[in-house]
Image 1 (cartoon, rainbow, N blue to C red):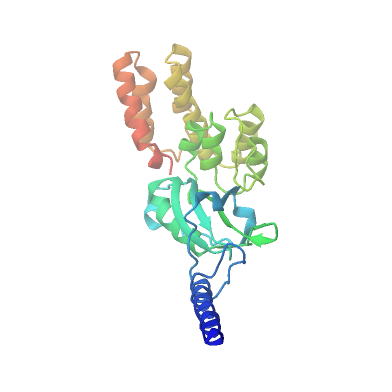
Image 2 (spheres, rainbow, N blue to C red):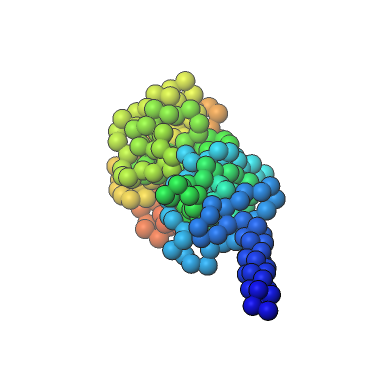
Length: 280
């Protein structure tokens, strides 16, 4: 009888162990064993936040960093700039969650979809793959260069980096963003050498150079509505290339001629609200 009870006890232990083993195969992971990465399976997110390690920018860790499509609405409005996506990566290197941190609303949806389809090299701790939280940074370069807007934004390194089209690697190196995984710029000041690089590149295209200089003049005027700054804008209007539309010059003329503060701000506001397509 003692032997029968002993055998029943062993069978009970084996049965319970089988249940827990089955649970491990469903969830694909245990506290002491690395995750089992099966195609189509989804691991269970740790309930304890301490089991997830923050890792910063994950672009460089990607095995496949899916590039988001440029949305049609974004192209139509010439939207550009960086989109930052917060992601949770499981021990198999698959994106478990993705959500927006920052970025233009028109660019966010495609960025999240691309992030979810990306895959990463598993991060290990003491030899075991772990859950990792970090960010992906996508940089949407403008589909069309708006040189009026670029000039207007050229007093900010971060904005200039966002609005410059592709092909300005030397300028981006001086701005401090080129070659970094996250394109982080530590200082927002723009050195004169960066402005000269942009000007020299535009010498063969007088229209885009004029738009760039006019955008800069409008920004200076927005900070200092003095006679000298208004005269500078009038000089640019008077020397506009033949292919600058009369309607555009007509829009800028009241800004250069008025000394009334209220009227000046109203005209400036109208220009700023239309800046996204005025220089195209």
